[in-house]
Image (cartoon, rainbow, N blue to C red):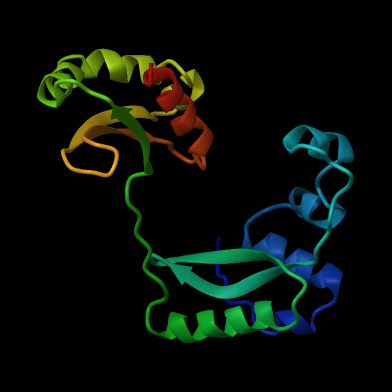
Length: 197
């Protein structure tokens, strides 16, 4: 990317903006065709979610002036509200003068939770879980081989004991699961469902 600062972009025609965007992102104009057609067929949409009846299109605009971690970034916005893209671009221009934005992230870990009730000997149960921890993590890893191949999967088990509650003593087991770029709820839930018995 050469620069996310494209002066006068809003004054250009739609076609001129596409040309400038292709230049700024070091792409060919053909690479941007998905942005001009809606990009998704009804058949594809039908396989993505349940009960598809159609699609909803929004205008796609480009947020300019963004600098993130020292790198120029063009930010696509799909929004119907006037002035959102202009406002964000202006804010990015102001932030750019001070070095732009700095972004960090944590590991993509989620916690799945399982509860054991009516446990006769909680200390013994806790020790047994930790004794079989490697085996349990391996079982949890079996549920999503693609996620495992991408570097994700089960990372840890944590056991918490609650001695006093309205339902009596119980144990909570946390499955720590690396979901990579996935949202992860289905993977974590499926892993917990497999481990729970």
